[in-house]
Amino acid sequence: MKRTEYEGKYFHHEEERKIRKLQPTTSGISLYETQQDEIVVLKLFDLNYNSSIHDSDTEFLNYLCKKFTQGMRRKERKIKPFSMQFDLAYTFSCATSNISLESTCDVKISYTHGLILISSGDIHVFDLYTKKFITTFSIPDCELLYMNIEENFDGNNNDALFFDCYGHNCVFKYDLKRLVDQTINKESCDFIWKSEKLEEPRGMALWKDRLCFEENLLFVCNEKHTDGSILILRSSTGQTVRTITNLESPYGLTFTENGNELFVSMLSSIEIFRKDDKNQWTFERLLVENDDIYSQGLTYDKVSKTLISCNDEFNEIQIFQPTDGTIIKEFGENVFLPDSLCLNEETGELFVCQDDSVKVYK
Image (cartoon, rainbow, N blue to C red):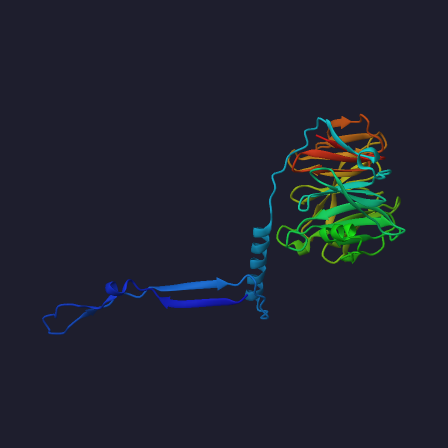
């Protein structure tokens, strides 16, 4: 970081800082009194400067200034909890959207760009506020599955879209705004990165670094019935940094609001993992396990601090108390094969992806 240090003297008004002559002493020597100088040190830090000097002080100042600018640009939104009343507010379907929404897989929201994204083989884009259909993105010979949004992925208030797929069997990362704009204009859009191959890609969740968005990590389920795993990818590059192994069919996952705990849905259980002192995610405890729990998609309500789950086997939405696994609420009216869900944190609405539609509850 370039540093400018200015050392100068602070003076009063010209008339007030004249040297005053005092009366001679008895020895006949004249004494003079001068105003004492006050030293002021002003340090300036250029937030747009990238120093080529690599001493530890400069690197640390660069780091602090980077965190400061990112923090100033970050937009905090007021979030609302889900009411748990399950009052139907809207339904995205073939009838309401005039597009095919059969076998819907996932739904996500971009608050930055005001978009709702629904995957159903392709990814359909809607306006968050009017529910109006905008465009559809697809990849030839590829079924697009589960998604995630990374807010402010570049430090300039732009969102990124992650999705996994059958066909390529990998994860893609795109600049969301560029992808939507170029799809509307019928132009091709290059991805930011493409991950290594996964055998059976499923749900994903983003772990956010509190200080540096370049350190965000994307957790992706690789289901595999006998030897499932969760790949942990660096969100900025797509590089696999570590893997959680020996899991039984991991399907959906979500983090608590502080990112300290990871909930993972398995075949008949929901397990909790925690990051240890060595930055390894290790099994902490079993939240719930029985034959009535066939959990798929998960989402965490940051306000009510509850865990919301899709039960595909019994066609229900279940709400758990994460501390002890107690079921707070079950809802199954007109729910059929729920796969995934997400919360609109601005309104408290719950979006539920099921076989042929996405239902919005308030």
